Structures are given as C-alpha cells and as structure tokens.
Image (cartoon, rainbow, N blue to C red):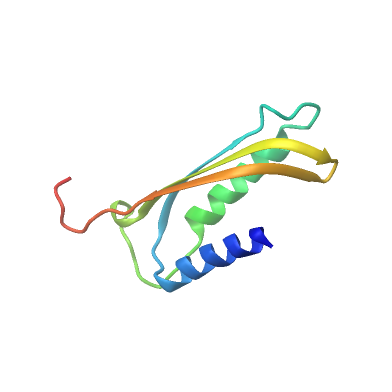
Amino acid sequence: MRKYLILLFFVSVITGVAQELNCKVQVLSQQIQGTDKRVFTTLQTAIFEFMNNKKWTTDAFKLDERIDCSILINVTERPSTDQFIATIQVQSRRPVFKSSV
C-alpha cells in the first residue's frame, strides 16, 4: 500500500506541473551476493532513459532549464529469487529563471 501511495504522489507531482528532467540515477547493490549484477545495471539504465527521454510536456526546454534530479536506489536484501528490498532517495534542484547563481 505504501508503494502505491508513493507512486501516486510522484505521478501527481509530475503531471501537475510538468517540466523536462536532467536526472542522474545510481543503483547500489553491494549488499546483495550471488545475483547477476547486470540486473541492476539494466534497471539503472532503464530508469535513466525513462526519466531523461520522457516528454512530460509539449513545451520546449533548453538543457539549462531542465530540473536537475538525482535518484539513488540502494538494494539491501533479496528475500526470494524474484523479490528485492531497497531504499530510494530522490533529490531535485530547479533552476531559477534569469538568476545569476
């Protein structure tokens, strides 16, 4: 239930005020042993491509007008062969139009 609430929050925020993203994604899996690390590399690439290539709006934004964000996923456990437990940290920074900073 908690996962669905978090997903609903992100979807509502993104669709409410859409803008293009410049997103860095990192998936950490050092705590997981005996798993093919390509799974995590593929996940990282898929999230990166989705967040940066998705057209959230029909407006055109320059690269310096995009919202900078960072997503860190730390995979901590593997309770079964098809389940993982992880934490996620999301940070964002929005540029201020016509600022000198």
